[in-house]
Amino acid sequence: MLRYFATLREHGYDVRINDDGCYRIPTYMPKQAIDQENIIFTHEEAVLISHLIESLDNTNVLKAALQRKLASVFFQETVAPYIVHPWNSMNVEVLTAAITEHQQVFVRGYECSYRGKVKDYTLEPYQLNLNCVDLWAYDVADGRCKLFKVARLNEVMLLNREWKYEDRHQKKVYDVFHIAGDAPLEHVKLRLSLKAKNLLVEEYPMTMDQVYQADGCWYWEGPIYGVLGAGRFVLGLCDTVELLEGEQLRKWVLERAKDAEAKFSIQTPDPARTG
Image 1: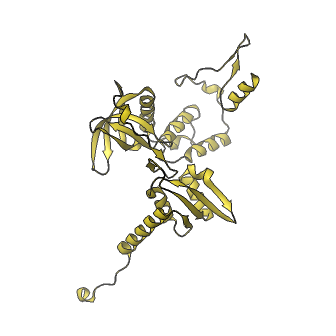
Image 2: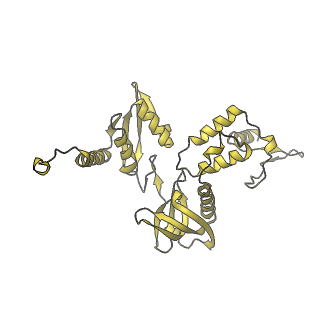
Image 3: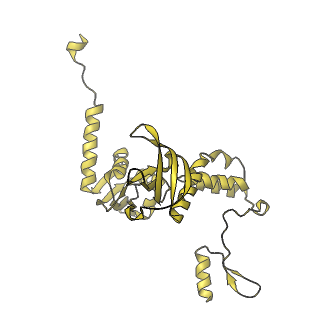
């Protein structure tokens, strides 16, 4: 029995013993008041915590929520300047509740880049990606599943309506470059310089467990669900990255490089026109 309780504690559960000798795990109450006087940080601890939060991807909308909560108990210059866009974290809380409770939501003012306008939606949200950047939801009016950027949601309101189209919800899987798909497109292997390795794990933290060192070089390999994410990374660091495996990715990179050469190459002025 004690072995089980030790395992629970190792996984972060607060296992306590009552006066009557019984064990219990206190219920977590998100809105419980915090006794700020009992939470003490040294300056070094505050700097470390704020830097860890700041190292999160800027597109992670939970970042602002963590910063705001830390600032509420330790409001110093190491934390306060980083608090931005608190409405994003509020929208994520509403979306998380809607997904958990199988409720529809109303989105007021979604900024559609490809249409160049703002539009309202009634949605059945069913999947947030790991970084809380993308939302998969069923568009009730349009009758199909769509991908939404959480940062473009101006306001999300929980409706008192249960899901009606759960059988049409299509679950998506993301690769480490934040590209979604139904199945892996191909396996990719990259040889990286130290600079490229550092940028890879900083910009795409999910690659950290897939990066390894061999023969004095750094490597990353894994599946991709589309060429766009990995392709942008390879193109941006083409002088420090070698593509060892991934023929579809290689084809895409070569095509984009050819397009770039045609678009940005310096052309000799026509003497007839300049004369």
